[in-house]
Image 1 (cartoon, helix red, strand yellow):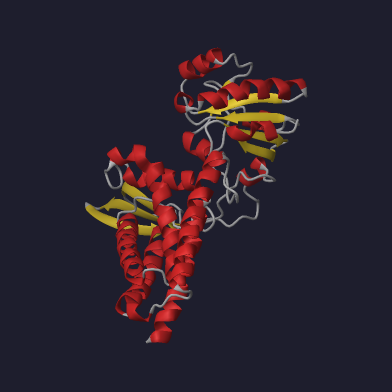
Image 2 (cartoon, helix red, strand yellow):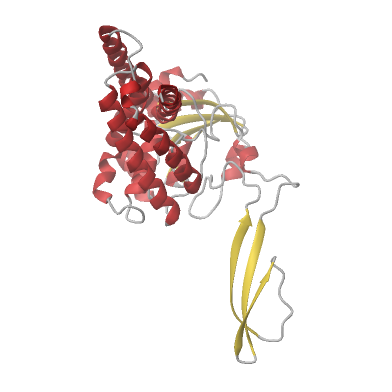
Length: 364
């Protein structure tokens, strides 16, 4: 039993640290996922949405800390009870998400590893079994250091997690797993190769044949049947190739400017998913940055999901010498974890990306 418990201890501890660190690297991204869970369409807890970032940081820090506690054997009963409570909650959440098909990606491993809701639920069930082994074998979990050193390591781990969370919030994620990371070409990530795998579809047709409903299933071809079509439904049996970027666009109310701007040799995008909640200090820095970039031959544009009135107000308030274009809010939140954030491109390839706190680091 002792060997089994120690194996489970290593597996659970390592997985909690790995999963927690991935989210700790991007707590703002995890907060967006929590907002999705808190929405009316999922858990119907909209009053929690304003606190999503605080909850995000607390949850991921606790997740990593519990993994550390388990591996070093710090307060075994508290650790195992906390692990059990956390995994029961997450198992319920992933089951609810999968069964009711509410959230397509659970966010368990951030943008590093994408799991479907059912895959995530399966992962949580396996973890639940391993934690139950730890729960019933908690007496076999012993500290690997003496009491003082174990306490010091636990405290240092907790402090390091809090510092790292603060650091990435004030700057950007240390590791970028998204399709908009430095070195990525947006146009290439939006394209679909000619030989790309096509989705396998199933079409269910319902016809009225001599007064009776007849159901016919095809791969998309229209059935040769002597009857009146009543309805049809489609189902994806096997998904095809999906580009890394789906919804990126640069638009006005009248025109799509995406291709035009992605062909620019020197382009700076000021990204603010919501101009009404943008950081005032950040926008003040943007003005000086834009002037410097324009002096060096860069085209500067803004991207926001805010309305035209708000865009014009921000432009006037900060005396900005560039225009804001329309882009989807979720896409802008994905591009850069800052409001505002700065993205520099050369013919669609991202060469620099910074939080507004780091605008001075940009090189033009």
